[in-house]
Image (cartoon, rainbow, N blue to C red; front, top):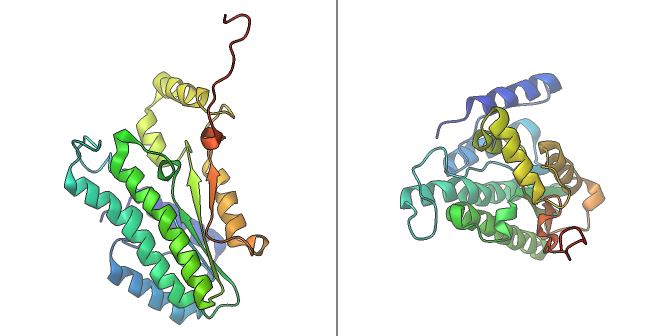
Length: 238
């Protein structure tokens, strides 16, 4: 798997800003041997793991030829998307449980998507993988509770967040602004979200403030999934 240079550079910079206590390592999330190596590294250097955020994800749009709809999708693309989005989460949870079960309190936060809550015909593999993340989160939460492990597991479902994936699709210049305006018009809060909006949600679910929250999902979408935006016409529209 080719790691995006900007992600590696950003991770290295964050670790540098934090100082010697922070470690940055690149990880192919779909490769079990990579997770095993990371697990050994965490155990040897820190002794335990308290928080895991499974955040790696791809749409498949930039790395594989389309189309991506349910009738015409390419199986290689389907497998590639699920390898990162679903296998990566499942493996992350698997190895985190082993590291976390002896901790005083631990939290797994899985980044799913609005697409994991509804169907997306033009991105069937992405929607499928993110829906599976939502359900696997609940399985992990119940498993840990049944075992008596001090591990909570929840999912976050962002929608229309200005991440690099969205930036690549929006383009540049006036066309970009027009695309953002068109997207915002369909959002009840009338603007796209930022990565910080998702980070705050992850921080809450990772913290002790959410110690009675497990097996649930938190939607960060400006109100898109709250319901229909239909409204009676105003007098000027009649």
